[in-house]
Length: 393
Ligand SMILES: Nc1nc2c(ncn2[C@@H]2O[C@H](COP(=O)(O)OP(=O)(O)OP(=O)(O)O)[C@@H](O)[C@H]2O)c(=O)[nH]1
Ligand SMILES: [Mg+2]
Image: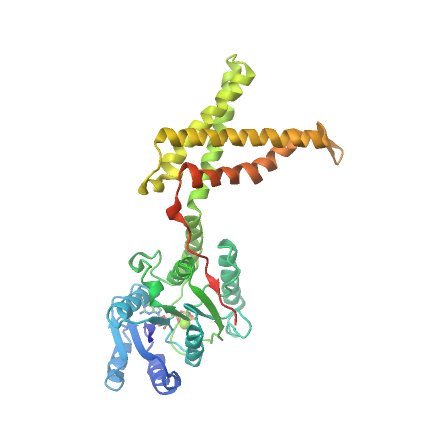
């Protein structure tokens, strides 16, 4: 494989001066079966980082340099990734900081994990054997640990432990499917989105323990803005993933309110209760149908629709009647088994009411969502790629 180690640099002269010979003389000779290249993505560092690289280029033919305007860490990495894929034809790229916080001696282990079958290798601080700097203050430690935990909870992904590591080895076949020009962040959080996209593609992910060192030279470029941006991006990506179900629940909620309003108004205008309830129900069904059609399931327009609007409406109405029937059946069975009233902690409640709520939440809503997706707005094209597989040692 052709592997390009991408190191973004901004005022990193003191570190990069030492790093290049370590990579070239110590590390690369240990990696036998791969074509190793280094790409420095410098942002016109005023300290003369680029000049150091140009000097080394005379000696090392596998050392590349690209320069650009300073736009942020993510922008520099994206530039490096695109250059690696388009100009250097890399099979895999490694994200590797130039400041010795990532230990170059870990590189062969990350590559070995890919040799063993992984598509995406994470240098992980939060698996046994990994660590964050002891010297970090409690606030930075907390932020780092809590940050990963937060992402794991929000994304419901507990298989990966280090969600914000910057030390990665990625097969370019996965990167090529990501729209790198339009990532949400040009800074630190770019890595959260790439992780998200690669997982979604079903890559085989492996975490390899690394000890993240404290910076000894040069200055940190991470800012508080990065933290807020990360928070936004984690939530935004989760919402994007569940956009359809959120819209569906929202539409259901508006239907619920509409049903009550219409029924109530009809009753106070003298309409018989049963008729009013039927009309209220149908008003909600129609409103839900049209809102779902133009909003929740709008993207299904892109595929060839089987059936006309009328057909969809009939299917939708049938599904809704089925839900009402289910609610009726559940209450009927509950009353049959438990009697009219339930006595709980000294209170008496109608069995029918007590059973209605869990029936709607646990049965009716999931069933409706399933029917809408599979029957009314059939969207076979949305079939998810297989879930990311986490390799264990
Ligand atoms: N080209 C480029 N490189 C950057 C930019 N920001 C950071 N870097 C480099 O990216 C790497 C990581 O940045 P750091 O500031 O060390 O971020 P960090 O490791 O998360 O934070 P510290 O632990 O404080 O060092 C270093 O090699 C930086 O020189 C940027 O805007 N452009
Ligand atoms: Mg650093």
